[in-house]
Image (cartoon, rainbow, N blue to C red; front, side, top):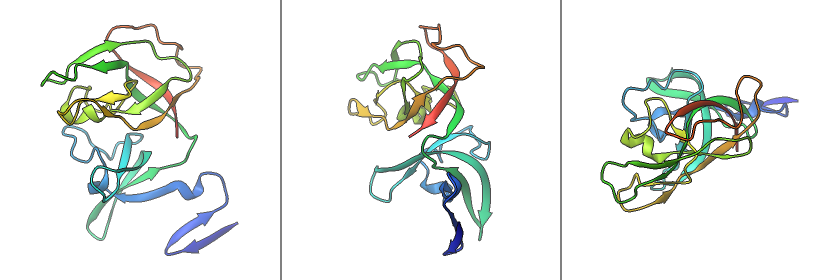
Length: 177
């Protein structure tokens, strides 16, 4: 069953109602230098107009311009699986001005994957916004919680758990929450 409301198609089909145009300025990683958000499958977070409140995590599908404003179409569908680059960092040195990674670990099926707010500080490789670290020090005032983006899931094209315990960035199948 499909109906239209306010120029949006609303469908009872699984996932059809979860692709929404979002102004680029409302995304957490909109100001990330060196990254083109128009490239498909970048993880992102829609930020509420309330200061710093994370509204919803999703994956960028495409970019478009509507009435002169840049938008990205984001998949907000729960349980959708995309391959994303994930940094295996576990902790940061919260007292270092340079935002230094402190420890790393393997990534296994079922591990939580976080949208890492340290991506703003260029501690993560360009184009990488996800990590296994539940905390970041992006606000320079000690540890702050990273929003949960999803969970690592099985894929036939990757070895799980990963075997690297030193700093690395892996392409991981991630199921969005």
